[in-house]
Amino acid sequence: MLYIIGLGLGDERDITLRGLEAVKKSQKIYMEAYTSLLSFGLSSDGLSSLEKFYGKPITLADREMVEEKAGSMIEEAIDNDIAFLVVGDPFGATTHSDLVVRAKKLGVKVEVVHNASVMNAVGICGLQLYHYGETVSIPFFTETWRPDSFYEKIKKNRALGLHTLCLLDIRVKEPTFESLCRGGKKQYEPPRYMTVNTAIEQLLEVEEKRGESVYGEETECVGFARLGAEDQKIVSGTMMQLESVDFGAPLHCLVIVGKTHPVEEEMLEFYKYETAN
Image (cartoon, rainbow, N blue to C red; front, side, top):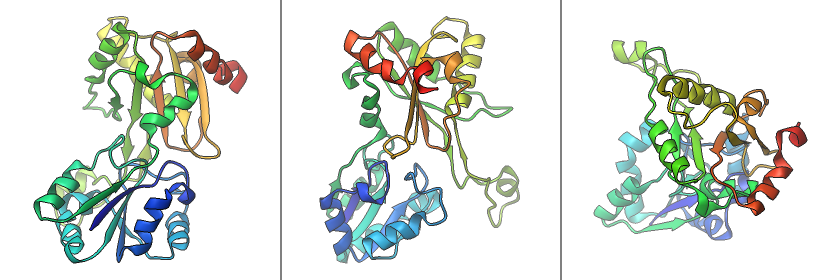
């Protein structure tokens, strides 16, 4: 059996009872370590906290392992109970459909244990989840690569009066350009996590380039940091206001506010820029 288990967004205590039972009976545990991280995952003792809580060793599964060597993990699940731990929900912001498809093709039973994800946790700010349009991803710009495909999606959402959740880039274990060119042993860039501030800077750059007045410095947004953790930070304000806020440690995400209902506005007041600062 292959268990794909959502861990939620906070710390090791956010796993569900059903998920914990699956971990306890698994012979081997893998932890997905490239699409997200728990609030304690940035600290040196992050993994040891999990291992202590579960009473079992955990193997980190980085991008290369999941994309290139997932077959061996699935084969292990033919005769053993294997747990694959995912921050958030297994089918939340980042889906693991490919893993499920490959396992089922090999006749391996798969059980998914769901948990909280950024996709529903953003509801804490008061913006109703069924008033959201398509979610977009904001990648880090480089000198030669400044994609703006998200602009059209935001434009459609705003034309319909819908809110837009922007998921911000995470760059973990990315090979350096030099090591890719050279071949041989890969060297990796240091981890980078996009901030709300960088996202807004890039969004405004694209608006200036496109000039279609989809959004601007005075557009209302909500910035989130460490959503689901005890020290989460939520601030509502204009793009210009949020660009100056120190949201602290990752992970961050951003919502561009669409047409609001009075109840939504009442909730947003609790997180207003002036109040939060």
